[in-house]
Length: 393
Image (tube, rainbow, N blue to C red; front, side, top):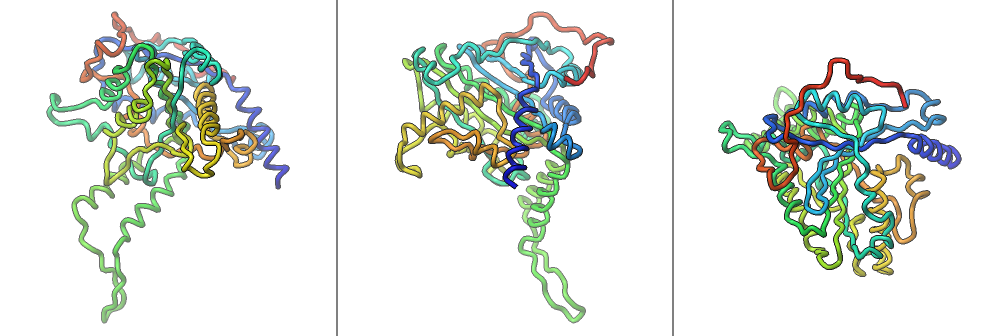
């Protein structure tokens, strides 16, 4: 019923508007010996805070929805920063898990860096700034993983690579008047989502299998799989064995008009993500129905400039709010804007290993001295009496 859908959309908006958030900055010592595997363990532990409506009262009266986190890598005037935005009630659990896996990392509550930018597109223009933005999506089914940190590691340590290095190099090679803001929004998903991946595995196993007749009845004639096909099945099954998060990746590029470079904005971040591409697995692409470049040849062909401006405005607001797509279709239309309907934002499911590959403290393999400010003294472990589980907010 339309009334029930409208009621649910309203209650969910009330629930989300009442959530208290805090922005934390990670500060690193001169050397981190941990590999991204530690961040994999962090995401696995953080999955336990997943919330979801457990009965009709929580769903239709409280409007409860699964809460999310935002993991952000930004370069502001040439300085690279790592941030995490979390619901305040999950802060203690998040910090405890981070300290457990990275004891020498410092975590500091900070003001939102988005406050240094105008809140509207007109405000950006008035300051002599311009914006380009996009969201990234997986090209193939979610069950196909990207290249993870495991594929970057070698038995010989000197040949190992840290995938975060390429991202930091791209983010650093910009003018002081340019800014790249990258956020990865994640929320734990129910283990039942694994069923979709299991279905894909079964389809791949049955591919080219033929039913034949023999004097003794029917039998399956299974083809001999190539080493590559076997490796694909093995990798997918390993990926499905891990905890997973519903994920949205969004980035915006804000620069002074004197140095604004649309070619870098469009291709810089996606090129850094090409290192995660595996042609027989998965890779990233722009969500072309969301990103801020619109031409007259794109449907519906009219008002191309106004549509592009509307997309810029929406991406700026969504980035500032760290907004996940609306839960219901009617909510998407209720919050739609002229020239840009709010129905094309896409999330996808990623495992803890994939998330850890995209976001983790740079290891000792990364030459970070010219890229990021370091903490000069090594941090001691958290006190034994540190509070972990606080009261519900």
